[in-house]
Image 1 (cartoon, rainbow, N blue to C red):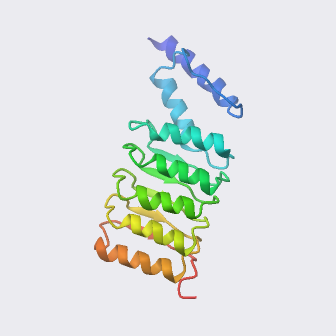
Image 2 (cartoon, rainbow, N blue to C red):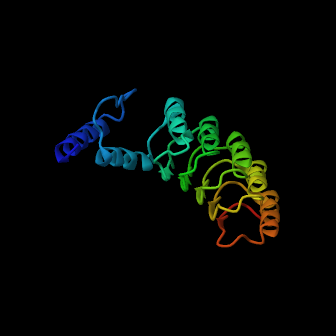
Length: 197
């Protein structure tokens, strides 16, 4: 495969990206070269502001589940993702070894997503940056996330602003910092969570 094949593949990717609102896309025998595949993966990195719906969430979860998925960063902020769909995406990262950054901020995540995170965070050894800000985790959900973080030493940045953490969630995170000795470079963003109110 030479330059012409890559140019053809790039043309196909441009065409595919124009029709992203269609129900299905098939890539069989398009001759996607390295360049075309990279362009497609780059397009999937930032899906913010798009309504994924359940079918989109399931498809993306399936891609993330692949242990050697080419995705290392995904922005799914403001996609109107439901709690159920969020739990699917989160469960998919359990054994993923490439995804380092996941932005799930400004969605409708709640207890189901938090429970999924509580079970995934102890075993995921790749995720470094996770944003859950502007979701409906509330104290119970934030405590689930905190519990999952106790054995996790890879997550370095966690956004939990505007999640309704309250005192109960803050206490749970205090325990995490105590256990992990404030794990090197761990930074949590807890802005506006009614702590001490």
